[in-house]
Picture 1 (tube, each protein chain N blue to C red):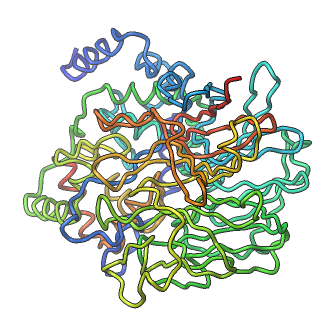
Picture 2: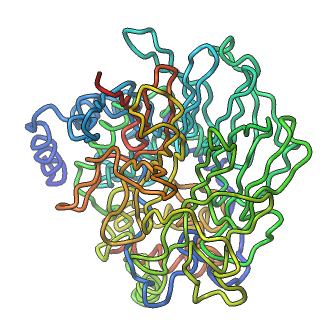
Length: 398
Length: 196
């Protein structure tokens, strides 16, 4: 009887097959731009892990940090954990992509209590805090939860989507958002493709808005896909990381780090990817665009891009930029899967590994994917691991 | 004991003898019983029900991800809303291990193979690179499902759903692969895979 009920329900729910119009097949956005000779390449984005990783399976013991630092497991049970922001009362909010959730983490001192604040969203990868309100950016929506820390059990999101009028295309619609020192909300919008000729007023840019979604302004142009940025603690300048195109080679182009010196500055997409002149796109030359501040490596996938604003780390890390490299898929040998630190050494930028141990070069496998970064009031650095649904805490040894 | 049940029992026994694993087929069997999975997906995971997929020998990572998408309401199929409601991650991984442990098998009454249709489906499958992600055996890997031995009607339905953007995956790969494919081509591929 049960079975017959279920079958009837299913049959009723399935629409009849509609006849499709004959159209040429389009590749998925991430496979677009793949040359014919790579048509049978098995390379594809890695499968996400959307289930809880028990603490004894989180690879904490294989993590490596520089001499003088220590790393511990701070929170777990947050599948897909990426961006982290801190509320004024100390709640850490954590965004995700595939599992569609926003988590809230309360630190009781003895332990961290994880709860799910929102669920069922399409890739809520961007979070920002302002005056006790949590802004949530999903594809392609903007939500605001006022007094969020007073409403953890019953959040009432205000839908700001219409006010922000974000583009429709889903690809690269998972954004990082953050308030700038000017009080405006910065919202990047990646290209809806791997490489394409796209509307440069809508895509391939970083825009800023008033907190209510009004007064949109383009801050940076020619940005293929920035999923992480921050503002320099003293100059206030916008520093952003950028994902370069795929299918142009295992070792090129590099993902990059940029400084936006002038408002509206053009950084090169689709013609130039961090000094790499794209042979597939004619028109403008790399020499017409400001060079990147730093090359980060091919396909390393920078996510969290965060200035360390604490004082607990040694002097050389003051205002240093930490970058979480989520790791590659579009090259046979893995790259990234680590956190690096970019420091200014006498006017020259240098990069050093900071948290490693998640990439197993001998076996070409990875055990974690660093994504979000956050400086805590006590000067500890939190690092989220999307693969393990975990948050690590790095502190300087006294 | 029919051969298939014996085989399944042997596989399950082998799975049980492993040390306490994150995924446990025996625990999965109990949850599957409680949620009446077999009512639609068939005893042993070979579906006797029109438009219901067989799950025997399916990739456990694929099953896990799809159950999560059902539970979270991100993939909406009315028949799966109740069975997936409130499942814990552990239960989901156990169910996935349970169905993955059954040997993959075609529907016993799948009908005669139409050689011309199957040949056309085989050619199309290579042309569309199905064999790259799903592997030349079509047994799948990780988040990429096994598609051989699957019910022909379910394959037709699912491929059309991807084409018409009615079905989401954990990425957009299948929507793009299916973009613009004709119903006749879909029928050919489904026939080929069901009889493979």
